[in-house]
Length: 459
Image (cartoon, rainbow, N blue to C red; front, side, top):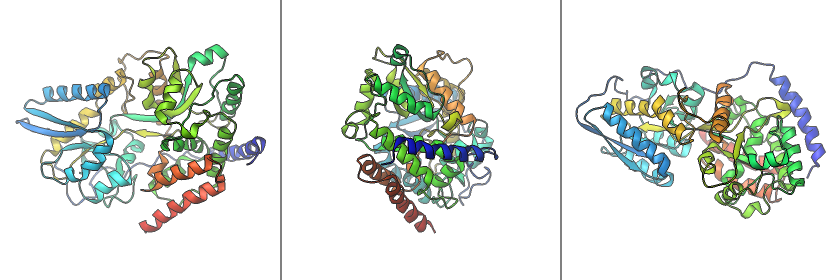
């Protein structure tokens, strides 16, 4: 393995190259095709005021945890009150059950009118291919969703009509919540030891050494579940590559490769963190939830994960926590892994498309944003100005982080969406990398094989 000094020599050169590239015009996150006429041959009902006669709207969602379920119950009750004669029949499932049962249900004439559909080729893409989802382009403009949802965010819920290309074509869903991956830090420990939030990635690496020297675990981490190791790697990767590259990689456009010097460097730096003892001892045998419990108990200074953890960290602990974005090389702004939560979609063929579209509008309304913010869940929509958010709170930190990357068009991607098998490949290859079985060069080559095989089948 390369020595630490050599890695940062490479990093310095790469940072200079990135700085030079940044003098050019920033490439915005790819937006979907200008909403207008959908590509699907089946045209949506002309949007307008939904009929007010007695009718039932069947809605499937996966907000099964108590606090989030209460938000949905409140929104549904208020929607019914605003639409006399309308009844919401809510069916709640966890995500695994939703994924397993949804395709069959959406193919039935009496299936859900509205359902949350997970993004990605294996879920939303497959349902688009089966012609089970209604294109929402007309509603996007006529109901004003384009004033609420940015083009870069809409692209994450978009596919071409054949379901093959993600990120362009028709819009098939709108998401009520947002997510950003960054660094949670234990304010209690930071204040006690006089540690400061780093302003650059170089300072972040120095801080890891300082924390370890103080006898504290720098980064609470467990890779047993596999998926969060992808975040550890990708958080670094997002600082080394451009938004255009990440878009092309995930959306399968632009003929990019995973086998690049930037990805090799990200893998090498991840190894340096692991081999430097900056992760929890024995991290390979620790699960994500157990790692979070240890962090919440004050057994680690930081952890790298998503904004969804915030609500869990504010209850039942004597520790105080904050959140910051992983800082960029040389202090320059970099991308952060992120996106939006599971979107609501409309079943193709429902006779209640207009009412369903009004329901989706309700899900991304200022009222919805307020309710999500009140339970420390980050809404995908702007939070109303009169919403009470405690200055300096953990939720305020995560909201600031999201606003920062969203407004700068620096919201990255979950890279495991790149192919239907990318997730499994990344998990397996990162385990080998962190276990010392492969090198960064071998890692990127193995992942590239998966990506190249997928692209070849798309021809």
